[in-house]
Length: 542
Image (cartoon, rainbow, N blue to C red; front, side, top):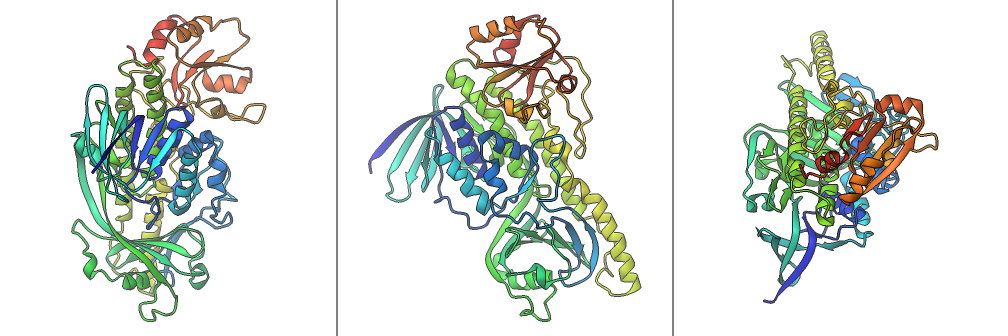
């Protein structure tokens, strides 16, 4: 058996949405990389469906937001949340939400969320990765082991088509290989957390389903029975493909005794007449609902990104979206290290910044899951009696109120900030409220630089992403020459943008605002006092 040795600056292990996004981000930064994946890249059981606002902003930066919007999900499909006993049963309550066509773009962002199931999102991301001359894709290669030296991370993989063993030597290795990450275990990084429950997903083909029940269009139908909430049905393609999740307990749900057809009929309300609504079970997948967080994000030249670093309940849809935020955070830092201007503390700042955000998102997701279980005294919920109607009204309102934060989480999606980051320069200003639902735009260091529309029709966010950007406000009587000199001396890429719009100046609050390549504010002030200190802090050299 021959052995091939391959060299690359960055090796990305795992070609799910986060791994593909990582390869795209590296490619956009001109960093050669290899993407290693055990499968052939096809999707058998799509999980991800919601693309959150911050992820759409990343897609906008990479030039693929339009493709995601045009993925094929019907623009006119209403995305309400429906609480019921079954699709043909009794309604508890409904949280009305508009279709993608009718939903306004929030004022805090140039983008809005999008329904794009993984079966469509994955090919869009894959094509973007393939289009990059900096990315090499290695599908059907199984990772066997990972080692590292002071200078390299080394991965040994087996080509599953010819059994050839290949050694890949990288300057940095990124584990995007999911919750059961081999990269994480080989790097000696442990996970802390707990199991929440076991569940089973059933992927269903049910032609023209919406026209065959009484609950109307919905993004998700949440089913409540005499024992409480037992499952939910989620739209996948807005037409014929659906995903039913059967909620379990902390005990495993063995597939050999699991009757998927029974549960689908229970959701449809057709147990007494299974042929009433035709359907086909496409796949059945058991999974663990857990809240887990890696004790470390970085070990030497190995870093974890996405589900390899954290798992969270999908209630709220923050799993992939948290991973994409991590992609934005670590991508420019690897660029700095590989191009020579990044300091010795730059990579460690990735863990310091992102691990608390993952903890925050895990807490949000578990809070949402617990809200699903908030169904006191549901015994009569299916009874078509006055007592049953009263129970349904009470539980429906309770669920609607307690789960609303899951669907309305702008503060979570845009309000994450790096308050304790060693590569941001604090300015002594008070933090804005940290609330899952409400986002307060701020240019305080560590925060996402706020969106505002420029006179030419662009967003302020369109100014960021390639390098550091120094925003200058005002008439120009204060010079940025000192900072330009310091960044040039340290070889840190810097663009200077002068803005004269008074409303944007008021939003950013200072005469000078330095924005990092990931769109977060690194420093701001009305005057530049110690330019070399600022440069060294933001590049991780202090």
